[in-house]
Length: 345
Image (cartoon, rainbow, N blue to C red; front, top):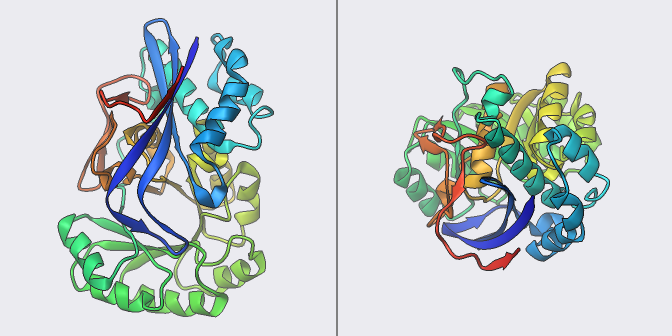
């Protein structure tokens, strides 16, 4: 088996801003595992909040190139178990590798990944479309530019309620709010009451990730469901979220890929937590991987590729929130003929 690493610059349609930072370009790493006529693809975009750069991911994967290339036909679960001690400090790199191996494993068996898992796709949830922080006027324009049944609205400003009130005048779509750790306890409880009046479905991570005492208060007093994101990164966090949140948002890059994400979903259900998977700013490779988890989810946020000026990959398509699978085995994604910024074979 051959490990191929490529880096691309993903250019966004609009500057993307959340409460912590903003960007116009996102660098992403594409991992390819090539075995004869079959190739599997995985992805992880870099993230300053988690201190994971392309260079760090490439270095960590390259250190274990020989081990990876000597993998044979183990199950994805067996491979993840072998790799986690080697990449325990870099879940982003482990995620890209895990996605690529799951893709390759299913392709070699002539099945889509969800088919291999025995999932039915009849009742998949719709994905939201994200509106990043901007002036109220520009956020309204983004709503008008992309009519959608569900919007995730990024907040964390001095005008948060004014923003939602202004956007509500433009659409009857469902709103989801993501404060990205920007609020305090009292603000979270008060905003929940006001946002409930504006047909908001839930609030994602209003409090700082480490404030578990505050999260408990908000969980008990909020009139809207509270979903953990930054507070739920890896498998061990799921149990902690029970009694502090009503649901969890799993990010594949944070937990280390599809393999641990499936275990997190099962555990969340045992704890009566609602389940969601979210994306970072990624290409269709990452989006296509998320699509195979849909049958197990209450909510999904997989609009990352819609925010790009040009995607580097083909795979799933989105039609007004509905996810349509590609007619390909595995995760169903493949790279377009676009030159990478960096290639390491």
